[in-house]
Length: 166
Image (cartoon, rainbow, N blue to C red; front, side, top):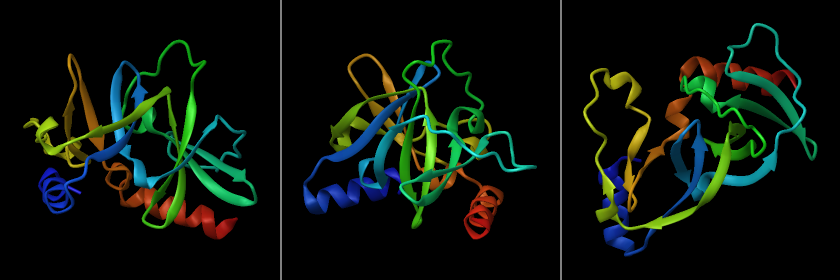
């Protein structure tokens, strides 16, 4: 959902947008709260041979097989030295549950359209296609991510393959 779509939706409903804010490395990111199923501690995962480095493997969550991806590795972000708060966010990506590893969970954000900026122009737009916008806080910025777009087509094929194998 682009910034324009977010603004059109809130103009119709008059509501605030709700996002779950988390930390990757030293920066804050957020995903739509409606796509979040739950937040859990780092589980034990079963690795999949020949998988990309950001794909940690699969886990069993109450009888459901869920793929786990390290978002820091996928986005080429150096993780924090102290991983005491590491968590997994279980998200719904196009009808498929997926676990994404983050450094820490911060809070739920509720904001209006005038607090969201457009995606800044970046020399290579390939990296900006999964950014929905930027939320401006008092003294910092939070990047709003589209998790479905963070995973490219090859990742989705791999995730679908692990579901079929399990």
